[in-house]
Amino acid sequence: MGWLDKVPRTEGGGLFIGGYAALHSQQPLFQQAKITHVISVLDYDIFEGDYLKAYERIHVRLDDDPNENILHHLHKTTEFIDAALSKGGAVFVHCAMGKSRSATVVIAYLMWKYGSSPEEALKQLREGRGVCEPNPGFMEQLHVYHRMLQAQDAESAKQIYDTWVNEVDPLRDWYSFRSYRAQSAATKL
View 1 (cartoon, rainbow, N blue to C red):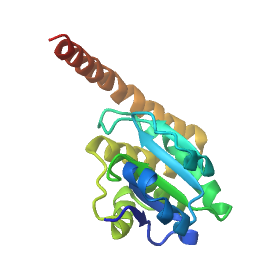
View 2 (view 1 turned 90 degrees about the horizontal axis):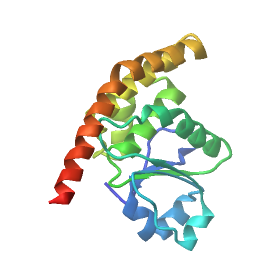
View 3 (view 1 turned 120 degrees about the vertical axis):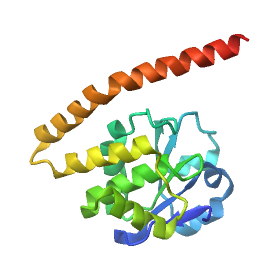
């Protein structure tokens, strides 16, 4: 595991994954890899250094929590990666540690681009960064995304997503509310 790990066997070879620390401490590596685009998948704001202005960026605000809906963002992140790579750019996808959230985004891209299953895409990703391990909730959502990608048309894909949201999200809301109440109670102590 390095600061900036290359995702193997991708067209153009310009897809990289890593942790938050690399974004702020490894600018020479970014220049060497010719990074042009950055996807940050974090539940907090990013320190805005002047050097970050050199990159086209998107920030997906998500916690590494199995109850988070990362599926909602996968179309946007996949399009962002594909557009950057199609123009000859290089993309760095990161979360806090470069293990779960960023891995989920990269796996979704590999599934979309190469028709891989979630397990095949994870195996490919681990060839470049062995520590990648999406949390169980994100793996479940990658399986839903896989079904969406295999759908006959956009309406069928939307129906798959809507069914998943209606079955799962009410429970997620309940668990999130319980977690919020527990944190609030602990803060008052």
